[in-house]
Amino acid sequence: MFKIVCMLSGRGSNFKAILDNIKNGMLKAQIVCVVSDKQCLGLEIAKQNNIEAIFLDPKGLTRKEYAQRLIKTIEPYKPDLIVLAGFMRILDDSFVDAFEGKIVNIHPSLLPLFKGLNPQKQALESGVRISGATVHFVTNELDSGPIIIQAAVCVHSNDTPESLADRILKLEHKIYSIAIKLIIESKVAFIKTNSGYKAKFRDIIETENFIINPLI
Ligand code: GRF
Image (cartoon, rainbow, N blue to C red; front, side, top):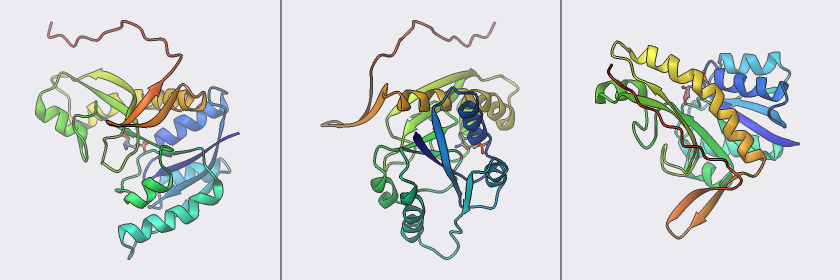
């Protein structure tokens, strides 16, 4: 069975959406444990579902020391994939290197735009008419690894960061599972090329869909 470790720091709605898609058979996988740097709702959801829920306190540890703790905790589970679902901590390079090509993240913007904190606020301030969410492989550079899937939403003229975040979150819950399914089915792979890291696709049906965000 394809083994997933989920890392999160908060309410865990993306984790829950993935878990639901495992339960309904869309994803042939098992979440073997959930790791968090905070005592949070996500850990509670894991416990309610009889999934190992591990709180790893970063207090007093350097980023490198914390990465070592994470590696030691996660390695015995031998995960096929580590899913970052709102893990609000920059990961040390040693962690990314230990699980190279096996870590994915979701970010609530159309990367490479609006990396880092408060991407919805950044989107509103920039005046873009379309924003969205991105699932990508994780590399050592923040929010910059090869993109697997993106989804777009319209930005409304009366949006607040919260209303835009809510609209994007609904799509996050769909695309994270689609990306994971592509990985499970080997339809996308993380590869190294001379010009850097890439996502390599196979057997993907590409359509000519397009999105226009008009001011009518
Ligand atoms: C999501 O918006 C995700 O894109 C970002 O953190 C948030 C986590 O939300 N990385 P949740 O805990 O999954 O509800």
